[in-house]
Structure formats: structure tokens, C-alpha cells
Amino acid sequence: MADLIGLAVIFLILAIIAYVLGARGVAGMSMQIAKWLVIIFIILAIITFFL
Picture 1 (cartoon, one colour):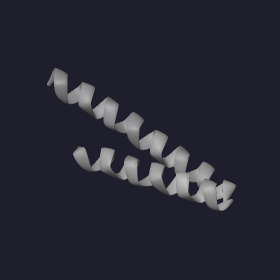
Picture 2 (cartoon, one colour):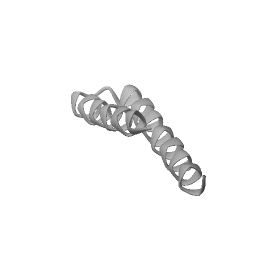
Picture 3 (tube, helix red, strand yellow):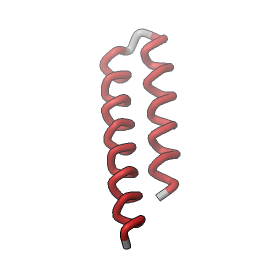
């Protein structure tokens, strides 16, 4: 499960670098992927907490 947070951070960094370099489409897509990875991580953390 910690891998999801690591992947989210990597995609966030990729999004920031792409935004600075002017690739706005790649930056937006990377941010969407990072957002969904964080959401999945939170859901799995809550499920694990209750089990």
C-alpha cells in the first residue's frame, strides 16, 4: 500500500516538471493519475483500519 503513495508522489513530481516545461496536457494527466492514486490509497487505508 505504501507503493501507491510513492507512485502518487512520482506522478506529482512529473506533473510539476511537465508544467514547468510547458507540456500542459502531460501535466494535467499526471495530476489526474496522482489524484486517483491518493484516493485509492486513502480508501485502502480506511478498509485496512477497520479490518
